Length: 477
Image (cartoon, rainbow, N blue to C red; front, side, top):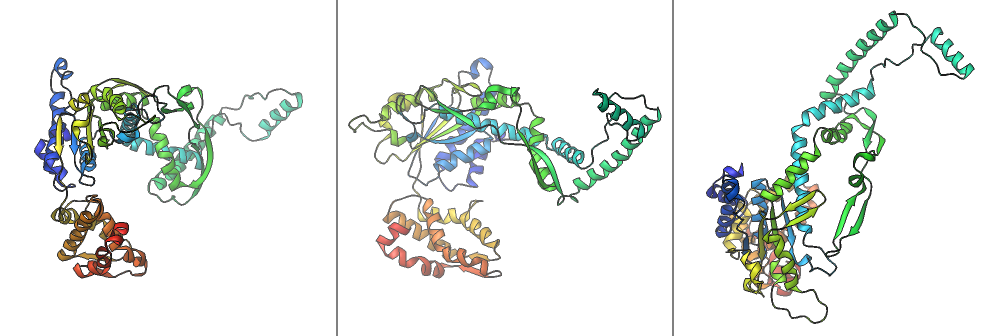
C-alpha cells in the first residue's frame, strides 16, 4: 500500500514513469507521506493538521500533470484534473467551482463500486450461470398441473361454467413423479453448469432479459454560477420505479459478460459504497488545478468581462475548507490535497490574491526539458514512446529496432524545434515520432515479418527537410 511507502520509495516509484523533476517528486512524496502520518495522530489533533497544498511552476509538457496523476494512482486515491480557466465567478454563465468536488465524489463512487464488484466476482459468476441454466432448462414447477384425462376434464368443466379451475385431489404418487422429474432436471442442469463454466457452450445463442440504461437524465440549473446539475429520475424516486428490462438474443459467452456486472451490483450495498467514497474524498482526495496562471494577473479588460480575481475568490473557500452539497450528500473539503500548476510566463505567483497564495504554501519550480532529458524519456520509463511504438508495430508483424544514434537524433530534433518554435516540452516528442513513423504505420499491414531499424540516417531522411525549413516546421512539427 502507498501508506506504507516512505518518501524515498514514492520518488522511486515516480521515477519509473517520469524523468527528472526531483524537487517536484520530493514535494508530492512528502505530502503523501504526511497523510499516513496524520492518520496515526489522536482524533483531536488529526483534525487540526491541514494538507500542505502544492503550487507547481513550470512550462507545459514537463510532467506536472503526470506527477499528480501517478501520485494519485500510487495512493489509490480519488483524483481529478480541472482547468482553472473553465470556471467563472458567481453570476456568469459557466462552471461552478463546486463542480470540481462533485466530479471528485463521482470518481470516488465509481472507484469504490468497482473494487466492491471485484470482490464479489465469483459469486456474481455463479449467479450468472444459474440465470443462464434457468433459461436453458428450468426446474419443473410444483404448480404445474399434470397432463392427462383427469386434468383436462376439470379444466374443461371450469371453462364451461366460467369458474376458476380448482386443483383436483390427485393421487399421492403425483408428488413422487414430480420429485423424479426434479431430480432428472437437476442432473441435466448440473451438466449444463459444468459445460458453461468450461466455455463449451459460449457460441450457443440464448435469449435473456437484461437491464436497459437508466431513464434519461433531466438537467436543471443551480442558482449559484448557473452550474448544470444532472439528476437522474431513477435516483429521485429510488426503488419506487422498477428498472427497465428487455429481452436480447446473444451467445452464452456474451450473456455471461452482459449479466456479470448486473449480478455483481445486486451483491453490493450502494449505501456503503457512497459512505466509503465520501470518506475517501474527504481524507485522501486529490484535485489537480491546472492553468492557475490563466486566472492570475492584474485586470486589464474593459466591459462586462469575467473577473480573474473573482474566480480566485470563488476557488478560495474550496481550498480553505468548506462543505459542498453533492447528489450523494455533503462533502467537506478541509483535507483534500490541492496541487495547482501553471506556466506563469506572463503573470507571477505573487499576482494571485494573498489568501490564495497562503493556501498554496509549497512552491516547486519544474525545469525545462533538455535534449538529454528527451533521450531518457524515449528509453527509460516503463511507458517510453519507443516501447509503445514497438508494441504497436508488433501487432502488424513488423519489428522496430532503435539504435542509440537514432534516439539521439530524435531527441536533438525535438529540442531544436522546441527552441525554434513554441516550447511544449515532452509533448513535442509525440509530434516528432508520429511524423517519423507515419509512412511505416500506413504500410505496416502489408509488411508482416519486416524488421525496420530506426537509426540516425532513417530519422534524417524522414525529418531533415522539415526541420531545415523553419516555416514548415512551425506548422508540421
